[in-house]
Image (tube, rainbow, N blue to C red; front, side, top):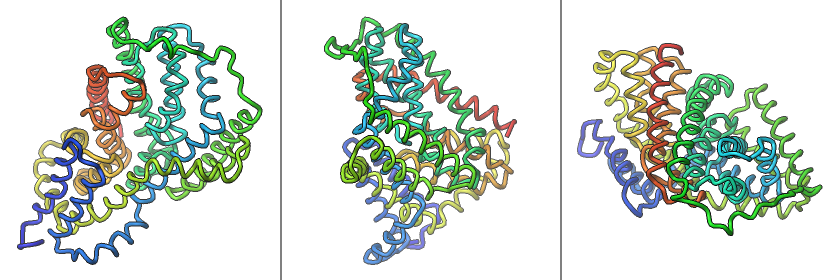
Amino acid sequence: MIFDLPPLFGLFPLLLYVILAFKKGMHPVVNVAICVVVGAVMVQQPILGMGAIIAKAMGSFLALVGLIIMLGSGLGVVLRHTGVAEHIVYFFMKKIGVDSENKAIIATMVTSVALVALLGTLAGANAIIAPIVIPLVAAIGITPSVIAVIFQGAGQTGLFIGPFSPPMVTLMGITGLTYTQILFSAGLPLSIVMWIVTFFVAKRVQKSTSGVYSYSKDQLVIKENYQPSAETRRGTWAFLGCMALLVGYGILHKGGASYAVMVMLITSLATGLAGGLSLGRIFDGVMEGCGRLIWLFFIFLLFDPFLGFVDKSGAFAALGELLKPYMETSGKLGFTVFSSLVGIFGISGAAVAQAIMIDKLFRTLAEAMNISMYLWALIILVGHQLTSFAYPGADMIGEMGLAQSSDLKSMLKVGYAIIAASMVLVVAMTYIL
């Protein structure tokens, strides 16, 4: 450390990152870049040697997750160009039968969860869904506030059950558990809690906002007799069949994070060709989707050296030693609650990077207290995914924008209801897992 500072001072770049994350107008990439430079200076890393460190980061786990996210966005563009996304949405909406408020809420929840799980992206999936779902549910009188609540409250759970979603891939990498183990110990329990909370909060929001907020009449145009083309039908079967086969193979042979790259590429190719697109158009679609999230890839690329410098300073180890007596006194329950709340309220930024930070901060203590990997997976999932419900950040505002809502109060209602219910789940699972 520079000036022979104590190891705990190595946490300063992490603290700076959290502070800058809440600064208005601060671009996330700029934030991480600043913290990388500060971290490098503190551990006396030569700035001219940063190129080699970033080159090494290109092969890191975080960079791989960033690539998977971009490819998921690319697949979403292919689904839109072939009409497959629209076909899937109409299928769910028609099967449920949108003729009442309750059915409209459930149909929107199911549709959002399904597409987010398949694509592994919240904003990308809901961006596809929104223009199709809104006219259908608006005709029943559902308000923009309710759609926004559903898009985030229910839609985000698609990330907890999708086999190749960023949170699931990250948790598999951190814990060493398989997809099914994480699904049943963490992903599904948390999703069920969030589905229940979102449904009842959505009903209350509908009651309180009906007549206050509404969609304009020009958005109530519905395709009464929607019929997919032959190419769209073929593309849909190719998409669903390809995903089923590749996911099944991945689960059977324990395909890791790198396998997800091939799933996205093969599915995009198969869906595009079956849907009548040329190879050139498929490639352009994938690149269009990737281009929208290239900034996120750079964040993950920079996060590897950022966390590496903090780790090199000895800060994580020093913090663990400092907290150890308090954690041992509070016991297993105190540790699970404390680490979950620190993840939710104390660490902000890119969700996948948050998961890595929580693991680095508390992993040694978790192992010392005999926390099972199943419970640890749930703690990390809660800690790094529910931050978006605690503060009006990019995810919350983004889903409001897609739903055409300006009702922030309702978003915070569902957010804190979900956080409270999730903490009850963490407490309960402390005695089960």
